[in-house]
Amino acid sequence: MTRSPFSLALVGLIALFTFTSAPLARAQDAAKDTGTNQQVTEDDVIAGTMNIDFKTRTNLDTSGDLKKGSAAIGAQDKYNFALNVAKTTEFAGDILRQPKLFSSVLGRTKQDARLAYSVNIAVLNPRDLKQKKNVGKWVGEVAMDPNTGAYKLGEGASPLRIAVDAVGKAQAFTDRFGGVLVGKAEKKESLSSRTYNRLIGGKTVSVTVKRSDPMSFNQIELAKGPAEVYPHTYVNGRLDYDYETGNWYTDGIRFKYNLDGRDYEDVVTGSIKWVEDPNRATNGKGYYEFNLRFNEDKNKPAQGEGAAFDAMSGEDAFFAVDASIPCMTGRIEYVDTFISGGTTPSSSKITYHLNANKLTKQQIVNFFKLWMVCVGPTNDE
Image (cartoon, rainbow, N blue to C red; front, side, top):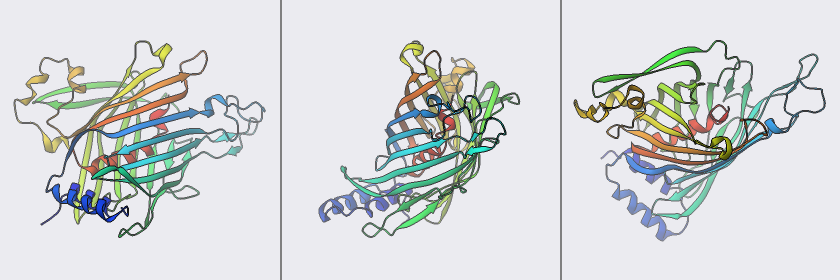
């Protein structure tokens, strides 16, 4: 009998535990109970907090040696987080980002840009989530080119990688990230219009973005882990930012991987809508509302099931959640503190509440890894 990816995920995680024989036996029973169920429908499959301190916006150069408005040498933005992913994996630690700095007169490089990860990885016993075992780290650096906006995942001084220790019967391994992420454009004059379409119950609804700024994924490689059931994955596609609304759109992010000898391709489409609190100027509140659909073309609802969307305007229908399709929904909530006299955040307190509807654990973990690779562009103003 061929095991499902979800069942394999539980077995892989259980192999990482060395608590006592009794909890391990109970966890093995839990794996057997999953049967052939391959999908998860549950709230808070990515949940926890992130705190960002934008030191590069507040600790500015006062020496006069750097270009006007530059951050001070050594100033770094710090992304500190503790996030539970797919209920049985925890990522906790820091990501540091520093900009490239140039001398004021000759424009010589005084500091290279880099993104550095130091994240602890733990797994939780599926039968008793109070039991947690640290199994490895997500570490290394990403080389950044501010001229092109490129984040070169495979070219850091220390390779960006997931390194997992040998625990119990599970062998140690190290697997690297790779590829190129091209962030939001430095120069905005060349931004172009783009239209995004969505088919709902036989009806096509569209949203046109006048200034679409693409963040592209060029053969990005997501390292496997923390268990073997979360395989090395290749990602291509784009996620586009709308400067007028703060929304993100995608007409196709493709994740390709092999699991248990079978090739998979997940195509993610949809939107991430920015919603500001009416009193954001004083309370700093706002949130991203997720509506990302997985393999929408393969999971089209039966004819006539789109009637619930008929009364909506085109834009409302575009952002509406269709629970008949596998999707990731929920919110990432922000409470920002602004630099005095402006609307640029000096720090952000962020809470994750992302939900899965008919998603596999592999789909959830893959999306999380990609989102953490994009942590800079997705939190820039």
